[in-house]
Length: 257
Length: 339
Image 1 (cartoon, rainbow over the protein chains, first blue to last red):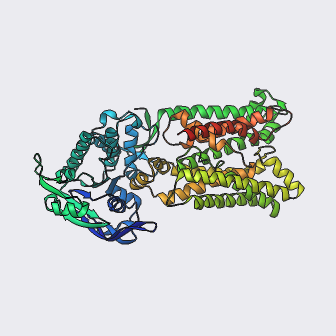
Image 2: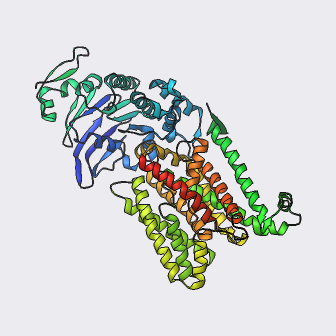
Image 3: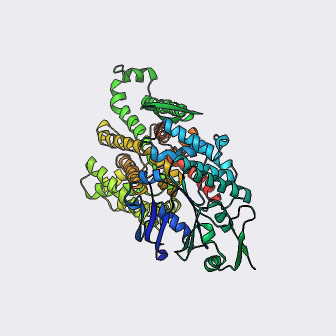
């Protein structure tokens, strides 16, 4: 059993402190949405959870071991991450990009085995990009490109999948398509953590919501417990009504003004 | 699927794109042809048949070919390959076609080291090589520190490197001006980069170093290409970035400085060869093998031109590479500015 948790975590860049004394456990096998206003430290937290950022204080633990002390390959076999605004190398084709996800499983010479091929075929099927395999990534639409990157991270075969604002720059249909994909991956047993901007999408698709403000976790729990009119006003400063989503029944935020 | 698998046991294989394989074989042939042309050329033109006979260990011009011309050709091929590799390393590191050691001042820095050892020190081959490598590494560290501002940026490193290159070129001129006459004459003849007078006795050390660094680089090639995904994805997909970057810088500087210590700062091979190779194999990122093969072909071919152009005057090969590469650099700069 694996566990990802942050203990008394403090994060920052240069002389700017972003996150202070944060404690968090990511529930295993669930879809966690991290929400909060701009610049509240969501992305910074995610970067620390995948070891892109070294904590100033506190610790991120994977299975009770300090993430900083693990080997890069070990971390990459446990935690898959899709940052914001990734750019594919010039001229790369879809299948070539997805294969890059196998890095942590390959030998130093980059040998390729049947297990690698299986993982890539499976990842492309799961992300719905099998038909695009030989297309150039730069010629794809934004939605297709995002699915290709997710396929690359899926090929990494990690129990954890962390995504920083994966729906940004997608039109609404593609946003929902992507969220359904993430929910399906959760159903297949992965732990999914995504920074999401749209509260209604977060409550509809996630099992667990982490609400942040000013570098602190304000509330965590099931969407129905966390996303209330009081909390939305406290976190975002937006007076609103929270009613059940007429389709999914999840909490839906309706601004008052 | 346009890839072939080279089996390495237990059902695993190394994937190679078919186009890379074909282009590489063609490039090997081109490099060999350039080398053979170089062997035919000396004080006049020898017949290919005599040269082939000499290579087989006989014929009328055996001595001339194997003692005089062969080391120059072997050096040209090996140094060209080394420069091509060094260029590919830095272009991958900076993710920028301008990020080549000759543009960012590493050649100039290594040459500063060479000049210092020649003017101040003893001037043994090993001493010159060591001075060249040490100064090259110091230059790399200087550029890195100057360009470091809240993280690593390839473009910033290139811009800072161009400035450092200008400063060091000035420093090099100043050292030559202050040096003893004989050293200054030698240094000036050398300052464009030249294979003139290269003999077997000059090649032992550099060939060993270049060979060892090339093997090291081949082992680091797979991680290096993962860098094309960007720092973040490279790291979260399993690359130990800090260590890899240090290794690549040391190897890239080592290759550049080794060549500079023997042949002077031959510029533009490192800039041009990796991009030509990349376009020939239509690769993503900057592949190593095509860069090495194009580099070998370019330097050997340029040396043939340098010998033939104003014969019997033999030009330094750097004059030819500068002329060819300068045009390419202008085109590249214009294109980068437009983006």
